Image (tube, rainbow, N blue to C red; front, side, top):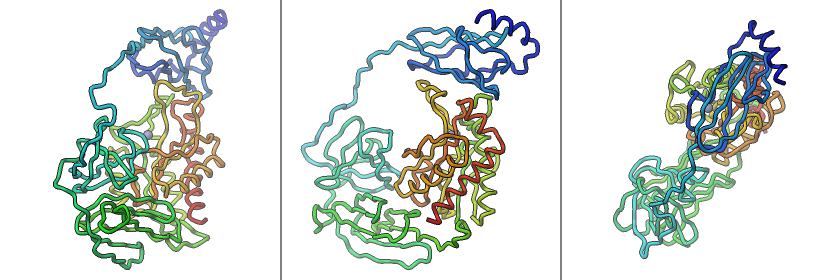
Length: 449
Ligand SMILES: [Zn+2]
């Protein structure tokens, strides 16, 4: 193989179109704390590419990706494309035991203490961990909670005799005794677009919303109810298409969007949809094999989707229409201010160091709340049927933009920018247009069903 590469280098080196461009790792001398990592970049397709003497396939687009193992200490890699050589030094630090100083086993309190949330949007979690799909509610400021123990920087909250939750130390402060609340009054407000329920208490209480059929809201520490729990059930005769539930003073307001009247032949007519091109401006997102930026791919697909949805009669709001920096919460805010029914975020995928970009490909659709899963399923089905990209599954993911319940919120990872084949598809104008059409078909199918 040595002769082969040498001959090619001599014959073709001079007419080389691409220089060897390594996109990842970003520098020649880096520290990566992982048992493996990968090289991603682009090279001349007519010259053999080698990493430490091993031939690496180069995709016809010029893109390549190759996973390498890392030993602890300094790892040297030589990348050769014809006569061109680049050297990389990747240091993998020796693993060492880090002693824990935080309370790592559960410490129960002898008597319950009362705490209260101190800021807006406080996550209540099912486990004492600050990650994963464990958020079960988000509270505004001033919700009282019974604390019965602690673990790893979280307080254990007792909701009733069977249900518990966790809240971070920094999200609450101690408060006066929390005596049981009185349920005062229930009222249904007439509205053409929403079912609105107002439930008055004499003080704020903890609650959980379960967005299945029926929609259930459980209120805790309520006087005169079994296990001090008042269960409000709303037997929906329609698909759930967005809701909100929170305290306004001592009144809990539950707003459930009515399923719009649709025309079978034009199901998207007048449906308000936010199309969100991921990242933008200072936030590039992932970088593809051909040094293409995720933010640009996202915007190209999002704009095509905007056109496609408008043609079908939908009212489309773009979270950004150009190369602008827009915060995650601003994207959610815009969705809620516009009272959009559907939120679709467009992204391209990448991977952490310990994964192999050649073993991950295709489209995945993320949702967080159960109400959005049927929409995610419908979009993925349509995309995998119509595009050459493979099925990388519908997944539940705790991503800030899909943790909005007022709209059905999904995030589409159209493909992997660091997978050479996927990346070539993502840059193909025809495939971008087909992706937009497939997404619109998926939304339409969901609404029509
Ligand atoms: Zn992204």
